[in-house]
Amino acid sequence: MKQRWLSRLGTKEVLVVFGGWALGATPFQGLVGDRDVLLVEDYTRLDDPLTDLSQFDRVNLLAFSFGVASAAHWLAQTGVRPDRLIAVSGTLSPADATRGIAPDVIRATADNLSPASFTKFCRRAGLGGTAPEIDIGSARAELFAVIERGMAPDTKFERIWIPERDRIIPTQAQHAAWATQQEVVRSMSGAHVPFQSGQSWEEWLA
Image 1 (cartoon, rainbow, N blue to C red):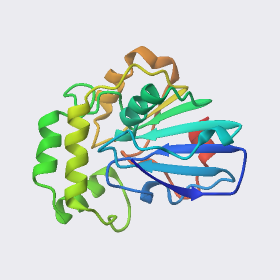
Image 2 (image 1 turned 135 degrees about the vertical axis):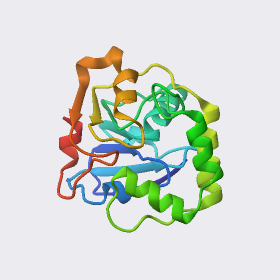
Image 3 (image 1 turned 135 degrees about the horizontal axis):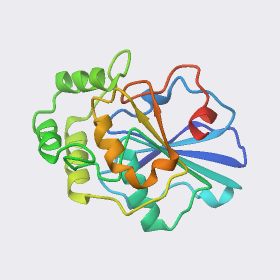
């Protein structure tokens, strides 16, 4: 895993964000707030150490897309328990025909990955503007690692957001995946990348 601070204000509360595949900080650039925000990405391996979270009085975690399963795997390995755990546009079964993305679709994405195909992926995800730069080899390896790692351990979330127009992880698959946690599921208009410029981080933690 890789980590970088999106915001470092020296507060006693931190938001750890497990981002999506190959998108980096781009989906979150328009979000605002007065909190420390640590972005985690690249799930080829999940055993890399993160910043010592014990220095904070409160730790919240927001997981997006493939970051949802990756965060759940990581939480099970480390025993970290955030004060509030949020899932957006993702499931615990990322490589699954009915509760995620069919594994053959992920493999085809990896096998045929190119700058052009990645730009198309970003458009389908609802990401505006120019696609982020991509390292083809690393991004391909990450997809195969997600398939190999499989379903994450059962994890309880305080809030689960499901976009109504998700063309990456189908909306229907997300609803099926979260059938046992329906009480915390909230549907929302939007695409796979649902974050809007000017929104606050607090809106997603509600």
